[in-house]
Every structure is written in C-alpha cells, then in structure tokens.
Image (cartoon, rainbow, N blue to C red; front, side, top):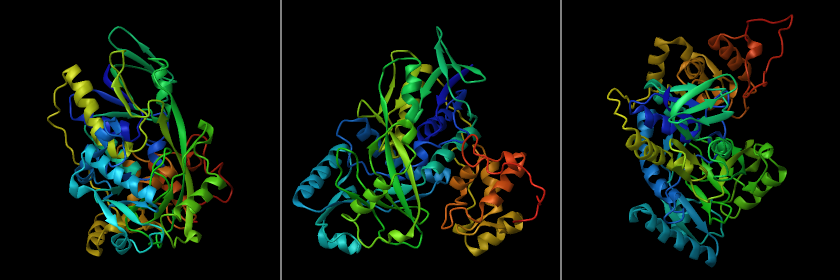
Length: 483
C-alpha cells in the first residue's frame, strides 16, 4: 500500500514528488511514457515568468510569483540551468502602451515589488536591446524574468525525490482507478497498485484520469505552440522579448535559451490530440511574420530546428489544484503558462495543505535537498576538465562535436536515477544531438552507449517512444569499430 501515487512525471508531478520526499510518505510516480517529462514539459518556452500577466486573484497569479522566487534556490540545490536575464513586454502603438501600463498595475497587484517591474522609455529600451523593432515605443521591464531548461528541471526534481526514497515506474499508463472505502486501486496494463491518495498531474491527459474518479469535472483542450530554434551563433537579443499579450496567450516571443540558442514562438492554436506535436508551414510562417513586430535583424537562415508542443488548456481558465469531492483524489490539472514558473509553489501547497494536514505525515529528517552535481564539460575550466579526466577517462572522449558532449556525460545521464532510456532522453539530459547538425554525427555513438549501459541489443535501442527502434537488425558487416 502506497501513501501517495502521483500520475504524471512532468514538472508538476516531479516537483510534487520532491515535496513528498520531505515527509515520511511511501510515494510512487507513474508515467505512461518510456521516459519522464516527455509531453508538455519537454516542449515549451523555458521561461520563469515574473508574474505580471495572470489575472489578479487567480491561482496562476498566486503561485506564479511565489514559484518564480523559489527557482533560484531550487536550481542551486538541484544543479538546474538557471539564468535571470530579464524580460520586456514591448508596445508599438498607443493602445499597446495603455495595455502595458495596465499590466504594470496588475503586476503590482499580484505582488511584484516596485524594483521588480517598471515602465521603460523608448531610448532606454533601444540602449539595452539594439535589435528591437523600430516600431517599439515603450516597454514593461521585468528584471526577475529568467530562463531554465524545463526537462532538466523535472528530471532533477525526480532524481532528488528518488534519492530520498520516492519510487518511479515508467511505461505504466493508468487505465482505470477504483475507489474502495479508504483506499484506491490504480490499474495499469500489467499491475494494480493500492494507495491512500492520488495526485492527478497527468497534464494533457488529466481530464481522462479525473473522469475515472469524478466524471465531467473539467475539460482539457490541447493548444499547440510551434517554435523555431536558431543556431548558437545568433546573438540578436539578450532579454526575453514579449509582445503585448492577446486572448490566445503571451504571443510570439524571442527567448534566448540557457544553452545559447534563440527560440522564437510559440503560436497558439486549438488542435486535436493527434495534431498537437505536428508543425505546419502556416504556423512557422506566422512566427516569422509576427516576431518582426518586436525584433529586427533575425537571420532566419540560421534556423536549425522546428518543433511543436501543446499546453493543456482547461475549461476553468485557471489552474485546477484541489481535492475533489472524492476524498483523497487531488487534481493538479490545467497547468498551462505560467505552470513552469509556478510549479515549486503549487507543489509545496499540494503537499503541505492537501496531504500533510489531512494525513498527519511526519517530516523525513534524513531528507537531502542536494542533487549530485552534473558534470557539464563545456562549462568547466581547463583545470577542472583535467581533474575530471584523470578520475575518469570517458570524460575526455567527445561524442557530440557540436555541443562538445563526452561519453562520460552520456553514461552519467543513463545511470542516474530517472536516467535516460532513449536517444532523445540522452539529448535532453546532455545536449548530445541538440547542436547544429542535429545528431547527424553522434546518434550512432549515443545508440551504442545506450545499448552497452542498458544491457540491451543495439536493435532494441529506441529513438524516443515505443516502436521507434533506430536499428532494425544486424547485418553481415556489423563491427564494433567506430563508424
């Protein structure tokens, strides 16, 4: 019997799992995919928003600012990429100027301090961002805006949770839930788990999970966002550049990424579930046309990748974070923007207010908040690299040339708790394959390392999901030599 089962391993489930680990709770995370954090958390803008945009009094507003203030400490404890580079909402006409003035007032009402939000005149905007559009007249300046790496944020929380006793089961889709008198039975395709509490953090599939216990509680609609990724040698803006938001969302952004690329997007379009990861020529062209209203001199010939992700847009128009009328069943659903920013805050709320107060769980006095440091060779000094290489020679063997990722880093990403199980899993933990050639050189070598350290045949190595085998069968000319 588990005390808590968390369904979903995105940023919500991961942060909640870590909070559960701070108490004497027997906790299990169930994830339907082969790897963790591979849905909404995998494909988003990576921004820790300041808290200027959510409607006053909403759960989004309540948790956004608290969560954004928690990120820096969490990132230090868990060795998560984090860069506070600031943001600007830019206005190009008088109507938009009125709008950013309204956002200024809203930000203060939401709890931002006066040194955390400011109106900035045109001359100062151009001084800070020379490539801002000539049409920009004024900006709302947000110095606490930051960027992170969402998948690693989720992985780091899960890894630390597992280091402190939480269990994780991937490839375990929940197909049914039955409520007994004082516990639940959670059914997957091959196992039944018993638990006192369920936390539904299933993201895009939260409606499906909720309907198993409390039918027709809310609706979730996928809203697709498409993106362009530019090469690392593109240095157009240093801040996150927002347009004035619309009913569809925050608009087409220009977002410098922690690892050096420039991200443009997202679009915003309601789609069917089978369309939510597909890019479209219309969507990608809309990004190019709309970003010019905010930023100029963007070299679109430097685009190295396009992708799409989906946000779980709820019928309630706000986060759904509450225990339902079925005691012990807790929904953490409808987590769209600013969900990444708010996650540490609402995770703490769920555990402290909805679990600990009801279940009388005792603190875990042996909880260790520190995650073992990730060795990122491209961030180390020459002396640090030499010390590491002397301890382990695999850190001197470059596998990904574009991102300078070593074999040692890839092995580490596989062998840690919540480790990589696929080529894409390695990519999102180490950046191997994320560079200019998009894994043209390193995919074969990454596949071999996965086979070796997962103790499986090369033909069983998966690219991302089920049935995505890269190698079909052995051939007569197979060799262990490098290709």
